[in-house]
Length: 248
Image (tube, rainbow, N blue to C red; front, side, top):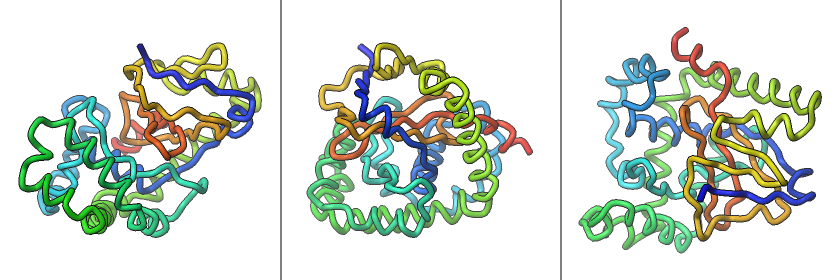
């Protein structure tokens, strides 16, 4: 069964948009691990080849499993503000509770047989607080190398997407907004359904907090949902115009 998010009245009044430099960084890293599926991004991948070769991101790659695997949510938690600064997001990441980090890293490593028992996996889990700091430092390095130079153009595409969808919501209501997010997203009977996902037993229900909607330059052709507790339910979808960004 697909992943279904049941939205009550309070959820519908609290749906919101956000742009997260931290989440964009981790979506870019996931793209680098799965390049053959992303035809729109071939130009960006070619431009980044030499840059990526100069980055030692091995500890981060541990937690970016093959498609269908789980990436720890603390690496890119749903932002609490609409337009957070990368510095604030990195500070929040560095403040992750070690117990939460350990649980999410364990779940991520279990997606690859034997990885949790490997020397690298054991070292990461033995001192989760130190691992969080190391992953935050590497994420900051990846941000500066991969996204920061072009971030104004990236942000302009994301803001334009939000403006377009906000106008559609103003003209046609939430039904028009939610049905137009992505071909794999359905909206009917107060239920937002992500057909690319299997049903998840511990999926985080909205519980009156609404759903966070985040456009992404790098997530195409997929739509991604953050669902693990305690994070707010989130739908990350491909931004309109992202193809022109990488070819311009």
